[in-house]
Figure 1 (spheres, rainbow, N blue to C red):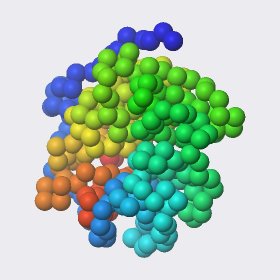
Figure 2: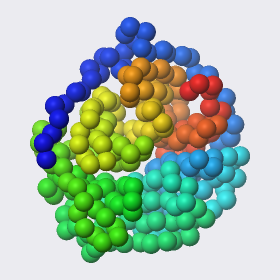
Figure 3: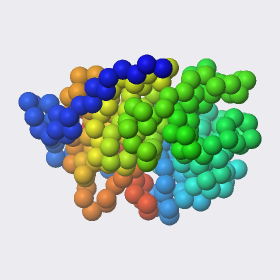
Length: 277
C-alpha cells in the first residue's frame, strides 16, 4: 500500500494559545452527581445518556443519566478491560489484551458473543482492538506492528497497514483504537492521535502529549491533558479548553449530549455539559 506523506500538525498550533485558535476558560462545570467506585479503569457512554464503567477486575457497571446503577455485570473476561466501546447503542464491545478475547453485550448487558482472537482470527499479540463497520474488527498486533482489519463474518483479513513504516518507531504504546464517522482513530501514548480512513490510509496526526484516552464526537476530539479538558476540531484545527478541578486529578472522560463524565481511580463525577462545548 502506498502511504501518503505525513501531515503532522505542530503541537504548538493545537495546544498553545496562538492566533486565537485556543480559547481557555475557567472551570464552568456544574456537578450533578457523583459515585465512589474502587479501581475505576475505563469510562464510556452511549447516545441514550447511559454511562458505563469498568473496574480493574473486569466488572462492568451501567448508570443512567441521573446516577442510578441500573446494571452490574461480572463479564466473562474477568480481567482488566483494554477497550470499552458503548458508542453503538445496540451493543457494547469489550476487549481484554491479557486474555486475547473480545466480547459483545446487548444494551441490557446480556452476552451476545465472546471469542478468542488467537483461536478464531490471529496468532500474534493483539494489544488493542475495536469494532468496525460491516461486522468487522480492527486490531493492532504488537508482534508484527501491523494495524489490521478482519471480517468477523468469515474471519478473513480485509486490510493491513505496517504502522512502524508510517510512524517509524518500534515500540508503539497504542492506548486507543476506535472507529467513528467512517474514520479510524489510533492514539499512541505521549505522541498523538493518528487518523486513518476506513481502508487504513493515513490522513493526519493530532499531537497529544498524554496517555489519557480521548473521546471522538462528530468533528471533535475531547481529551484531558495537563489539568484541562481540551476540545479540538480535527478538521479546522481550532481548539478550546476548560480548566478542571485540580484536586480531583481526573484522567478518564465520557461525554453525552447533556453531560460530562470525569473519573479518577476512585470517583466518577458527572457534570452538566457547558453550552457549545
